[in-house]
Length: 276
Image (cartoon, rainbow, N blue to C red):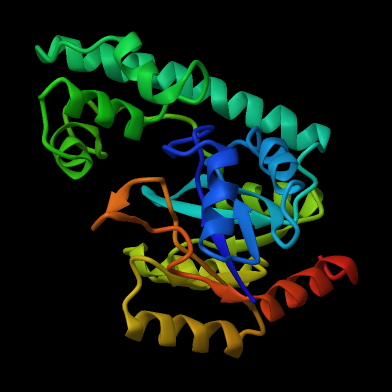
């Protein structure tokens, strides 16, 4: 019994709707998934509702917060959150507004560089609300300014590039705190991608509950290392594909990276026993 605990939908920067994610998870014979959109929980209800038409698929309410620590962006996953908690709803509403305002500023900056894209071009990929840099990257691809998302970020959208605009991000401490207040479990996302490894130990020191040991961009050695690290510090091992809905070699990433449901049970036990 397997579960993919890192999946994005059209409510952040994914290409698949929550319903399409659930349908695909069932097709791939997964037993569980977590919806972990960036800084929003708006897709969770739709995924849970869709799961009711199937017999054996569990949808875990989740989120992925974008944080900043010493100029490096760090992502913190939350699982089993009370996604209707008033404090969490207010925070995510504010983060969506910040993302939208930043998106408009990035488009303006691109225009000043002679790159002609509009907010309507971007909304083809983002919808009305949660505008992010990947949506702008896809608009740049469609308009022929770049060939792929990596090129868009490398040329224009990464920190230090010509069209980069800083936006408000939570601290790691704030992310862990709001996840815990929402009765959830906080996990370091894809630690193999973190440049300054001291940040991982900082997260452990301040009360992180788990490490995403399995990830689509982790090597076998990294999976082994972070599994050992999690076990040494009595932390939960989690994992997932980080699927955004793109076809890679003709298939979706969803379900190719997973953990076993025994780990689900461990997560639930930590949550329900009041240890957070």
